[in-house]
Amino acid sequence: MNGAGLLFASLLLGPATVAGIVLLRHHPNLREGLTLAAGTALLAINLRILSALNAGTPPSWQSADLLPGLGLELAVEPLGMLFALIASSLWLVTTVYAIGYLRGHGETHQSRFYSFFALSITCVMGIAFAGNLLTLFLFYELLSLATWPLVVHAGTDRARHGGRVYLGVLLGTSILFFLPAIILTWATAESLTFTPGGVFGPSTPPALLAALLVLFVFGVGKAAMMPFHRWLPAAMVAPTPVSALLHAVAVVKAGVFTLVKIGVYIFGLDQLSGVASRELLLYLAGFSLLAASIVAMRQDNLKARLAYSTVSQLAYISLGILLAVPSGITGSGLHIAMHAFGKITLFFCAGAIMVAAHKTQVSELRGLGRQMPFTMGAFLLASLSIAGLPPTGGTWSKWYLLLGTLDAGALLLAGALIVSTLLNLVYLTLIPVRAFWPGGAEPAPAGKLQEAPLACCIAIGVTTAACLALFLFPQPLYALVSRIPGAGG
Image 1 (cartoon, rainbow, N blue to C red):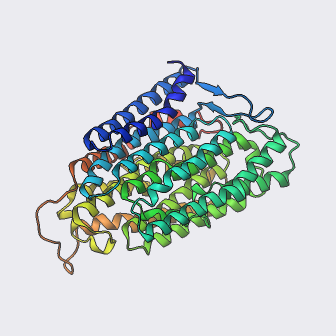
Image 2 (cartoon, rainbow, N blue to C red):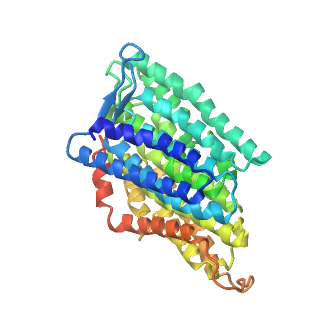
Image 3 (cartoon, rainbow, N blue to C red):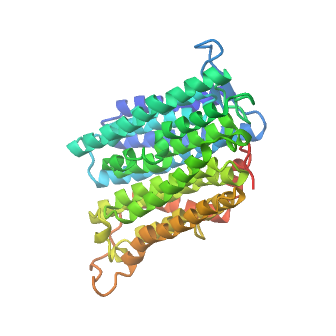
């Protein structure tokens, strides 16, 4: 299969999987086997694409012009390759988890879940391999539509309300900010193609660049920059595998990936550093990462606490690209991966607790470590990764982000990163600590071991092991991230 064929295979695999799921909807074992096979195939395709990129022959494709000089484009570069590999590997793991969760929790409409899950991953592949802003915008919007049925999966009034907030914020920011930014970029630069160093010429008015950066940052609502973050906690009404999809595999990563891609390939590092609105947006990112951490500490619902944690962690990635220094870009690229594995583990654990112990509140988890030692142990390690402490992968991304603030001379933001890390420790690691050592005032519940179904535990084990492996062996990931134009440090 040639390069363009590999790109089309990555996009067509999802719809083909949906067709198979519909045909096998009355045969759960075959349906889920097909989904696992599709996840394995997509990962294999992306590894072939990575091999072509490493060989210096990255695949690409262009359509006929839709407007003069403007068509759809697919292209492979290091940042998109990183995103595609994360999404495809975690699709496979999340499918394993979903089999145990959906059956253990007695969820209905499981065929619908697997179908829209597959369509969502197709949209993610389109975003990852988009060669220009038009193609990225198309798949970005399709992702919002493909994930909406997953958000409202339960069919309750609360789920429908969450779905309205979800679509309202994401589509609203796209229409009001993102689309006008794309149109202005096309009108100014006469190009939407992702280009190392950016597309704007030296004569571009500084005021226009400042306005465009604001429009892009607020227009990419999936990055959940405050004040356009409410969709993310609202979407927590969805089943836990969907929450894992939103927070680690697809939606939020599509948001911050898009911001990093725009910063690197539309503005370019040199031009971005001189944009007048950048400093204001930098401090907004700093405010977001601190404010969301403080809100997370006040949440007793476990999934809500994890949701606000995600808002904070996304602000780290946005901050990294807005620093406009090589170490900041490196930190953002690494954190896309490190946060993915850490946060998906936390959501897997939250779902396992609900399935096995029927608990959803942080205040109910004291002593649970004696019944679910594997799950709570994994929760502890993933919490360390989110906080950025050894021996977990999050250590490296947080280190480069901190270096980025120092390289940019942003000492106040360096302080914000340190304070946020301390807050991470408080609102995340104290949960498993109290679960194992509840203290004398609240004795641990008696009973035998009661872990989640085996499929859930397998998925938790894989992602937890990845958090540790990314600390011990970060070189392959760093080698890919360091090839992003402007990265280094």
